[in-house]
Image (cartoon, rainbow, N blue to C red; front, side):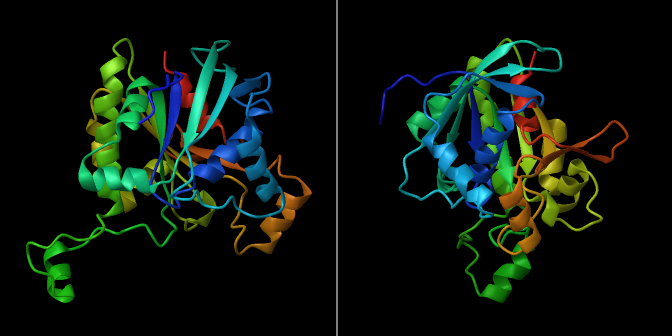
Length: 287
């Protein structure tokens, strides 16, 4: 395992496979280049990875999934916070992108590789991704009925945990590790619901979506001590590039006005903000 120094503070991108981490990172890179709540300062040294990803989006295609054997892609940059309590402060950020199977395996084995344990300890915060509109989202099961229907022995485990169980375990991992080196403030975790545009029209606010689809996660967020958590929705290009010809056309014409974040406002309703970097800005703005 590499012993190289881990730059800090880092904003970890965490989530299972096909949850949208790579596409978010690439779209966030494009968003950092214009003024939102966080602005890029200077030009990062290594932008090949995010520029390659951006070329896919500008052709009307999603960024391909990160290969299981691909090396970790670290996007490092200097940014300035433009709003909130920390307005005007400059942050060094590191956004590492890695295949989501590492995080799913960590939940099942209860073990985190040493390097990633160190990264979590040094992290300023994290963005935890979940995508409801994907085949790999595992719904909660009636365990007794399911075992009878599937003919499973009572001692035989399922291959996949319900997604909300994995999210809860990852939240616990983050809390327990980030608190080790963050004694002066509460680390922040942004739970990001990706592909927001694919949700049903009556989905409500981000908090409503979590409450309806992942009640266990909703309950944990209300009672999770030691870290500050907030739920966001994100759409990187306002549509499904795999199936929506209009969305593909819009990306090819001009990607810059596309994409948005969604928050739960003071009235409890969903509020759309044309800034895909909002979850990053919120994590970095911890006083």
